[in-house]
Length: 562
Image (cartoon, rainbow, N blue to C red; front, side, top):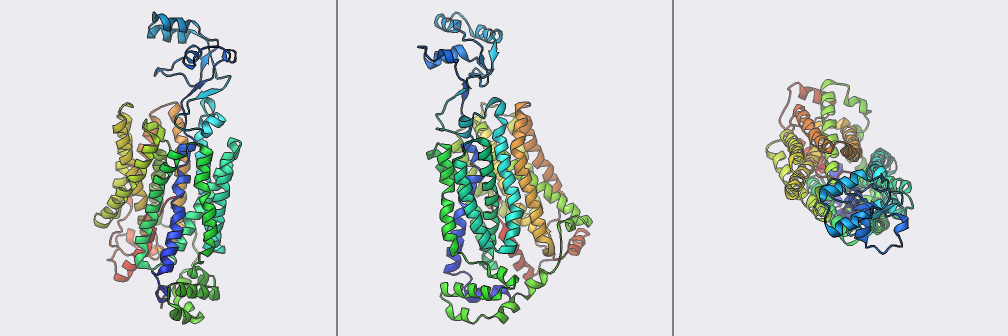
């Protein structure tokens, strides 16, 4: 008897599992709201230098004041970071008589003495009532702080994965999930009431850490209470929960235009999640592996009662539980570290290629998703489109992985994504529809690449070191997400450089993925020697038992990325 048999005995797909999955997936709906929140709370409104203080009592209209105080940039719009040192009164006369043409005005702009925005900035707040940009004047010389804020948030996601994930192995999934919900609620609330940009970054860092804890522990609790045969379906549900969350963010941001209230709106629900999470049952599998058999039996009996199988649950005892956990206990005795991912030739090549795939996928994904204003389209609409494109993308990649193979699917998704980004560099800025369509295709391919990453990596790494391998490549993904916002800063000096980097990196990693072995229909490796044998050309067909094990690995399919 295995642990799965015990789960069947108490009811593996009963009322408990249905309610359990629903309650755990609900917070995942809000995760995209925090991952992509920067698009709305840090939206950059149109702005220009405020007028000279001695003009405050003048009878000029706002348009006339703007004309005599702020020069035009090369696009004919008010310059964002410079103004005339003294008001240019003659421009009013020139405008009235229309004797001075456009060239004359530009010549006046060149000849007139300019200065920085000494008296601050004036913002056009038609799209948002307030953002962190307008509140703390993160423009001109401070404009790079916008990208730094997102990088700091992703740093929290990076640190939270090993910290909260490691603590969960020691103190339990349920306990750390409760901590993560509370940390997200408190950090999000404090973010909304931040009085300075450093405090904003500090609390956003806490939100990033909490998000990692929610992702890791929610998914662990889900898969450890359901049978193997439905894990792929449930994994798909979890993945689409994140997709729907992107649409919820767009809807919420559309109706809440103040960044503080928007941050509160996506953070307050976590207080509710924290309260009802006390009902969650700790993983009986984890309790048994921790030699807490009595607690594990109590949890199993509780699930049996909830599912209407009280009599079957009462039959479970310590001996039956220990017998069911023999295989898991024997597998957990091995001692392996991340260094084992690089000790042997084929493991080393495989790990390097997977690191490139994960880093580039996350890097380009967040590079495209985190600067919606650059497309020149309504940012609420583009957020809906970017979220909706994940739905067909995930369906298509599932089909290609099943019929064409994992390797060509992974390579194709990355290379096509990179090509669409590079083509976008050649499209004129005024062709907004074409630029948006190309960006949507690229983002869909990157979402598909993420799906493929989880399944493909789980099949490539051997059982004895699979968790270490998945943890390592996940760290690479978070590094890519951290670096992505900072690359946008290079566009201040070379406008086309960010697009070249965002497009070139996925293409290079798509080429690197060619050197990975195909796993479609191949048995899952159990040891490092199995990987080396596979790399040497020794392979076999998948047995029925290994097919069941594969379904267990597919539980990671469509898992949302933190």
